[in-house]
Each structure stands twice: as C-alpha cells, then as structure tokens.
Amino acid sequence: MNRNKLGAFVMTLLIIAYVAPLCIAYAGAGEPQGPGNIPEMPGVPDNAVQYNKTDTTPVAEMEQVKAGEPALFRYRNMTMLMNCTQNCTLVVTSDPDLTPKIFGFDIEPNQTMTLTINMSGSPLQGEQVMERTLNFYLGIEPNATLQLSAQIRLHINQTELNQELNRVINTSRLTWMYWNQPRAEWETVESHMDQNGYLVCNTDHFSTWTVAELADTPETTDSGMPIYIYIGAPVAVVALAAGVFVYKKRK
Image 1: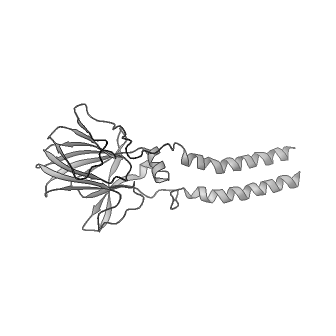
Image 2 (image 1 turned 180 degrees about the vertical axis):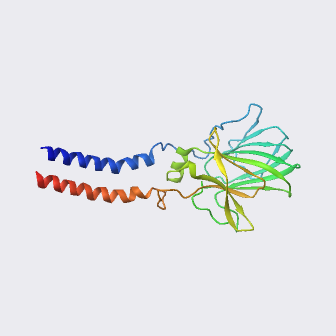
Image 3 (image 1 turned 60 degrees about the horizontal axis):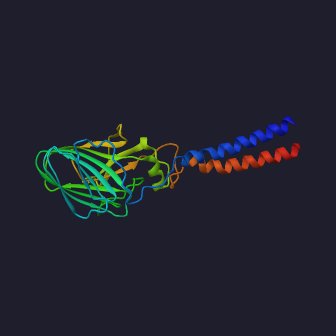
C-alpha cells in the first residue's frame, strides 16, 4: 500500500514539474492593446499642453513645441511627451499597423530645430533588421547638424508585450539601441527602468533607434519559449510512463 501511495505521489510531482513552467510562462497575459486603444501616459507633468488626435494616424503631421513648455501628443497608435529647451517643429509619421507605443523625449539642443520622427515596423533602407526587438523602429532626424543632449523613454507594459510578441519578455534585458552608420551595426546604449515604468537612455545624437531584448539564460528557442520547457516535456512524459509501469508491476 505504501508503495502504491509513493508511486502516485511521484507521478503527481512529475505532472506539476511539467505544467508549472507553462503556467509561469503565460501568467499575466491579457488582452493586447490594439490600434485605437489609447493607453494613459504615466508621469505627465501638470503643465503639459495636450493635443488629442486619437483618431489620427500621423503622416507628416506637423506640430509646434514651445521652448520649456511640455507638449503631449496623442495619436491613434503613438503617444509622446515632448519637452525641448528650444522652439521645435515636429514632423511626425507612424506606421498604422503598429500597436500603440508611449514615448517621452527631453531634448536640450543648442538651437531651434525641426525634428522628423518616424515610427515604423522596419528599419530604413540599408539598416539591418535587429532580432528580438519590440517590433518598432524609431527614426529621429534633426534638420541640421547641431549639438544636443537628450533623454529617450519608452513605457514598458510586460503583460501586453508578452501577448503581442508571443513570448515572455525579460524586462531586465531590454535596452535601447541605435543604428551606427559608420560601423553599419546596431549599438547598445546603457538603459534603465525608471519609477514610472519607462525604459530610459541618454544620448547626444539622433538616428534610427529601437528597443531589443538581449540574449538571456536559460537559452530560448526561436519562439522565445525557454528551452527547459521543450526539453522538460518529453522527459516528463517518459518519466510518467515509467512510473505507471512500475506502479502496475508492483500492483
């Protein structure tokens, strides 16, 4: 009798060992943010001037940002808070097929400027596709050569990202990257998560930017699922069959 109970207990543990990682991998997955569902933006200052264009997918949309006056622009699938120490003209375009993104920009240029911002699902011609990105590329180009210091922020919602990308995102491995034209490669920039859930980096130049998830351990499959789940499944099945065989034999 004790052997029968022991066999049943072992089989229960094997089942738990297989099912638990799957539950963890997909825990928290909710409804994705589809285009047109405009999320709220955390950390907006009280003095921000808001421009609500939530029915518009911007195509060369021209906006004005006054020096020292935070401006919040809400489009159909792109929300951005722009704060600039000089007067700035924005020309904004966004790929309508992309899920909503929330950006923040703090810019200190040495002169007034026109800034062209283009959010797309693929890099510009001549730029390589970066693996394990968050499915967007952000082109930021000033109209002239100038000196500046800037902070770029992207709000991170892990639950929505897990659902959108069909894999579990390790937020501690996310980093901003920019396309280094002379080297023809993507270059990582030191990044961190702030208290409002934004992935933040500082830069002194603009180009094409993206956010990617660096390789992590345990190793993952192409689908992003941890390898131990794929390995653990057949192992658990074999062990379970062996347990049943031993249980029946002893019975």
